[in-house]
Picture: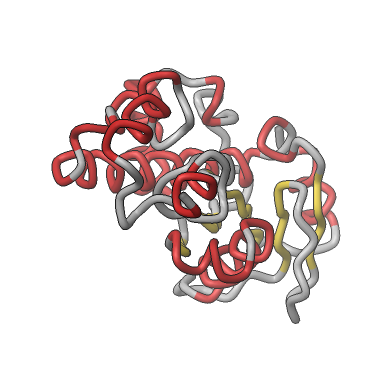
Length: 199
């Protein structure tokens, strides 16, 4: 998990930010990105791709990352931005925002799969959340942050079962969409929401 980081350490680069997003696929709510700078040679085997961890374990790791990280930045783009510019562009905007929200400027950025046009040297890594600890840490921060936001929105829109589906298009969620129609937080350009909006 430290292969990419070690390569940079050998070049004398120590402030490395891992960047990842969560929430590209859901029909509801924002896309959330995190940028995380971990201390040099910091390693915790519990930090891995957030999708491979249980919710309890993610919450645990979130606290450990928060306690140990040199800096954490969050970027959030809501459904309006997603509908306006498309999900891929919204993801890139949220990633840039997360990097800009770091209190310490990184010397190098490791990004999960996406190529960003930024002034800081960066490396885009396919499946980065499974190959780099910095990106995995960012995936955990982004996931827990988004889940907490969704739990709050679930209190406002309980009919869509968001606390269980996190905004993804599960059978129950789709059925609720047809029954109640889309909420203001649904992504109007995502199918089947887009069809329901037209009709």
